Amino acid sequence: MKNQLKVLRAMRNWSQADLGEHLDVSRQAVNAIETGKYDPSLPLAFKISRLFDLPIEQIFDDEFEGGNDV
Amino acid sequence: MFNADEDAGSNGKRILWMSLCGFGIIMLLGAITGFLSAHMEEGSGPLNLAGYAILAAFICVTLALAFAIWRLFRQMKRSDQKVPQREKIYNRFLIGSFIFGGVTGLILALTGSFDETEAGLISNDAMSPMLAIILSVALGVIVPAITFYWHKNLVDEQEEAAYRFGALIAMYAFWFIAPVWWFLWRGGILPAIDGIALYFITIFVALIVWFWKKYL
Image 1 (cartoon, rainbow over the protein chains, first blue to last red):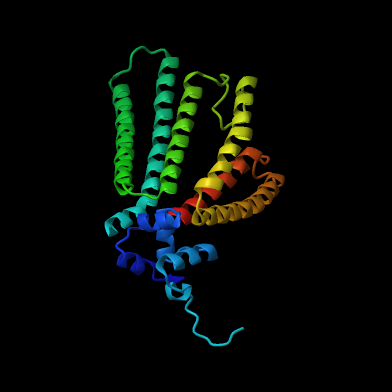
Image 2 (cartoon, each protein chain N blue to C red):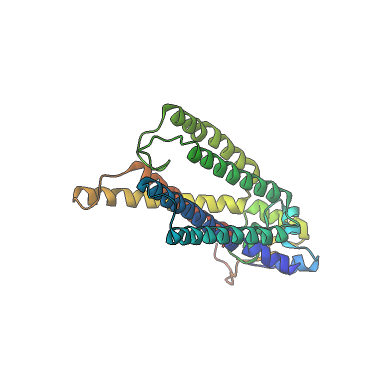
């Protein structure tokens, strides 16, 4: 899943280690999320959302373009 | 900042190379021991020039591999100057386990804890009851306790996912390899199924997939 994590992190001048410290995950986890190799769990996504004070959908993009698919 | 990030991202490759170098050192030490044992068994006195040259070549390559590990470790340490607390404890735990495992293996090998017929730990040959009990307690009680602590306190969700995927692929590997081996044994093509060999294949598959998902 595409995301803005690297941009948001850079805006705060944080390293992956800094972000990992804030989220209580390893740098590998931050790296894997940033590069789209790993999609975080809902609890971690909410934690990221709270940390950057942004809604989840502004950080993560599931690339869904349709309207009513429910 | 971003250089450090690149370092963090490429630590997986460093760990892979360090593991391969470590494996190479173990193989070379085995080769050196085998070479010297064979020479001593022949009883042909001191080594000749060719013997010394072979031994020196083995030792040089071993030292080169050890140096490569040290260099890679230094590079990792440089990129590890600031790491999350959880990862710091994780790394210490990992290094401690490697050192403990290595030292234990070395002590077992040097003290000749195996019977003369034994090729080592990974064989089906007999071992002394005391060694069997020690290894059983280690693998049946101590390692599970450490593993439980490891998963409960040190592993984050990305690594947990890597473990899960590794376990899934390993389970499939077991499901398919065991019957294929069994059929081939019944067809007289392969020897009878070796449970421990299957165990190691399963563990190896899980380890490779875990490493790929966690670091690469």
